[in-house]
Image (cartoon, rainbow, N blue to C red; front, side, top):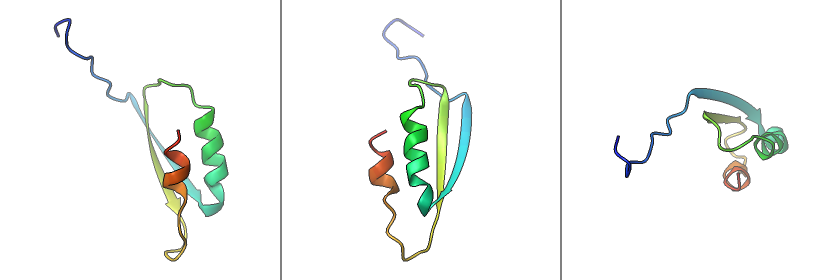
Length: 63
C-alpha cells in the first residue's frame, strides 16, 4: 500500500441483533452507546407483522 491509499476498513466481527417492533428503543439506545469507530458490522433483523410500518430505517439512519 502506498501513502495515498486508504487502508481497508473491513469488519473484524459481524454482530447479529434481532428485535421486534417494540425493540426499536433498545436498538436506538444500543447504537447511541456503541463507541465509534469500531471494527464491527451490525446485521439488524426486525420481526414484525407484514402490515406494520417499520420505523427502523428512520431511527437507525441517525446512528
